[in-house]
Image 1 (cartoon, helix red, strand yellow):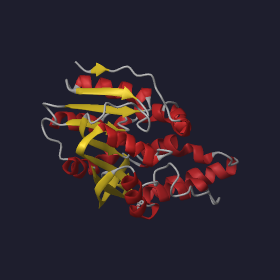
Image 2: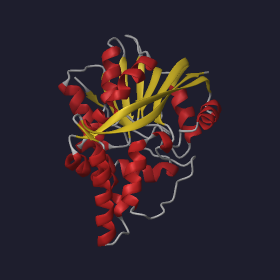
Image 3: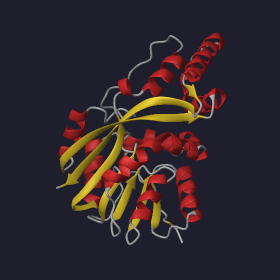
Length: 287
């Protein structure tokens, strides 16, 4: 039996905007398309789990667990231990619980929580993992310090984060197409977002200030899947990034969608629409 743990969601004021997005339409879209997101990121599954090195008795925390693929992966490895997935999105957590139950996993729980401020039991986990779920904290030092407090001394933190846009062809291509010639503002490198942990120097500074040591970043590059063919990928990408069409007139929207379709067509293969991507797998130890 999978326990659906009940939590009163406490959110750091600085994370309120993220909570509204992930516990709103954005999280609902991810929940609806969970299989697609999991397939896109699946090339990173093996190296992430290998680095995490979860053993049979480990207690594992999955940060920003989404619909729970990584939580289920570590729960299977920690057969005599437990796995807890936390996320801001109620919709994604509903999907996570359902999938864990369908797989007959008895050692996994899910809680709706902001990991920056959630009151985890001190020193209650051996390992904390995250698959692209740690890049959106408004105060990453506070967040990682809180996560560190949930780890036993010597416990490890392993996370998958994006490298800079230069290595991520998928996002560069989608952004360029949907901008339709407009200059789009680039968020500061230290603002919450997909590239907030792309700079190794910043990662070391943040994690060091949060009480971690032995901080290691290992680069990984994989080809990601975005759809069976151009039309399939176009529907998916517009559902995810369609907000970028805001402010365009009808002609601008047509140019943007045509541009997106062109890049998707150029990347269509016999195995679907595929783009290059680059990540860091970060490993650190709690002092």
